[in-house]
Length: 311
Image 1: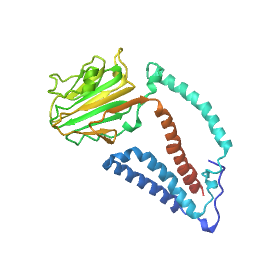
Image 2: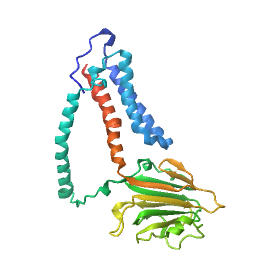
Image 3: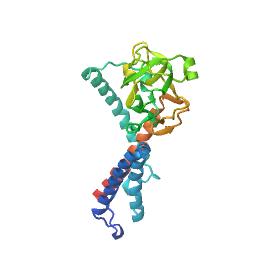
Image 4: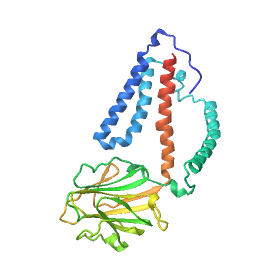
């Protein structure tokens, strides 16, 4: 983060233990408050990393700017980035990462005894917008699409809504996992496009294990919760996890629409839901960890806090 700083000696910038302690407490309390608020207001949960980054940069910046301190002493003067240090960091990474990759591979295959089956499809993920807490658990009539890890969950609560169905169309044949009294039967493309109004629930309460591209999903019991889960780990040999999935909700005209959520965002029940499983998350993941996690943490802990404790 820069050369070893020399302690500031001016009376105007005289230090006590209070400054770094206050800065640390402010950041911790603000992060705890934001985390607690996200439970009451779920949309905030997706921005907690950004809140943390703003605090890690904003608090020391405000303190040092108010003191008139030299940011270069702390190694956080972004106007004078030491290219030599950046080069050393890249060189160390180029040496360490291959060693780590080899060690991790040996651990997974030899110790954990997992089979190595490389495929670029394994690196596809659903949109990060689907990463959200469960919003329907305390609701009487709602549907939510969200991801848990890289598993797609279609979660469904119903008061007495066996007349509601979801039609799903994918670009590959696949099968659903499920939980609760639910039914998933094959539907053809015409049925998906026409969305016939369900007249009754299927008489069985299990998911058809035969792969298909078009599905008719419904809940088969009133006053219950259901969950359809889509994961690549449970797909049979003649099926695969789809890369494109479209869902449409079928609701009779005289029945109120359920609340629908895609991730944490509300969705009109009449609009089709388009989902994609892509590689874009890799770029977003890299930028997020660099700009929202690594640099703000270095700015606050190694740049500001460690230098102040040294002083």
